[in-house]
Length: 325
Image (cartoon, rainbow, N blue to C red; front, top):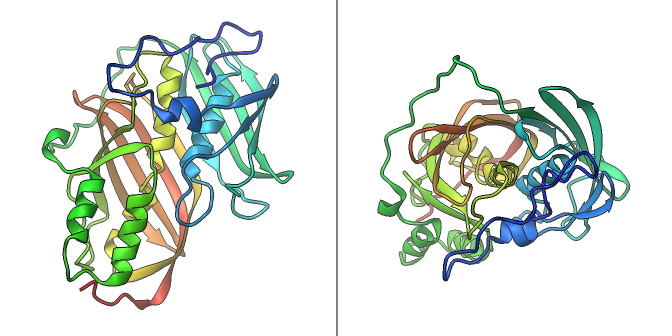
């Protein structure tokens, strides 16, 4: 991964990821390719694309992750990201996965404790995304608290998303259009390992509570390195299946259009993005063709590592879905 923290003269970069992958455990493609930016000028970078959703639009998580990489390369090594706030402005229409994205960084402010970097993502000469990321030097405080992590089965006791899809596909009663949809998901090369805690039943279109839990981690090995690297990977992971939480009470409708409007993250404690973390997602509200989702990424030891929030456009077909049987 292009070294976050390489401040281009403002301080040393973190250098390569420390250590070698364990035998048989390949370096995460999120580090070697997906979030790797090419530096064109001091604060100008170019990113290319790896996984493209079936919608053929750019995956929002990759834009967020790459923008954070660009911002992190404009701060000192000892400053760590604590928050980011993004808008998918899409002035030129949906992002084009066939065209590289330029990331233009503005060093908005550099203070004693906090620094802010603004990033603009550009395609075809127009902004498609803006982001502000704030970084902080480590500070101790006696004021500390957090929620309690939900009690769930450990990831070792759960099936992966791929295994669940294979289980559904073995059912001879599955309607052909849903079979095609699941085959398409199965064929996607998503660089994330996912284990849903309570996967929705593909054969049921009954409304469900707008909450979901799943274990997530980067596929492959990242290792001990600058914490900003793991934050960039978590930014990528955080957008996957996030907005879909708002659709769980409305499963009788077919999605016509769904896209992110904005995305915010707050980083609370160190974590390893290549270790299992519990992603707790909920949607407190939907209306006006928009849905709001909130999420928390928990370490296995119960420490709250990251909080996320996102709003997106959700448009559905007015006619309700037929049975999947």
